[in-house]
Image (tube, one colour):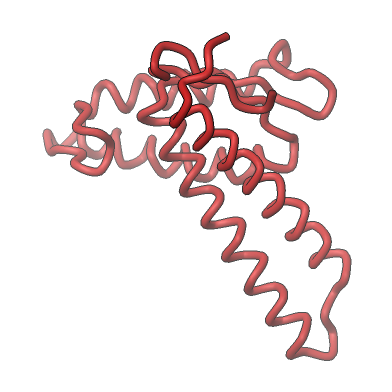
Amino acid sequence: MKVTGSGSPAYLTVRFREREIPGLEVELRERLRDAEAAVRDATDLERVDRRTPDEVLGATRRLLDQLADPDRHEGDRVIVTGPTWLLGTEIVLATITAVDRFRDIVHHFVDEVDGDPRLLREALAAANAWCETLMGYEHAETFGLGD
């Protein structure tokens, strides 16, 4: 199973495909910058499930550490476990970004004479992988699958 929830699910374990990792890293690094700024400026992070900036900062760093850990790589998958309130949000945002990128590349492919089929295939594969992850997340969130 690609996404497994545990504890209602308070935590998710996701088997991300390698092609998803760049998108996940972008989203997590953005979240990290926001949390660092909130800690530095003593402001609130309203958009992340009412967590404190320190909670968001710690959880985001732990997820980024997992992505960099070679022991979490199994073939073309990277296994990541994190709190649903953060990992679920990042899955939704990364999926939207991947689908938007695919849409933009489709438009370019159709409208321009130099459309690159390789880019179109890569964008489709990334959007597909993220949509599968999103569906797995929604399933785990709805049915609270246990380990």
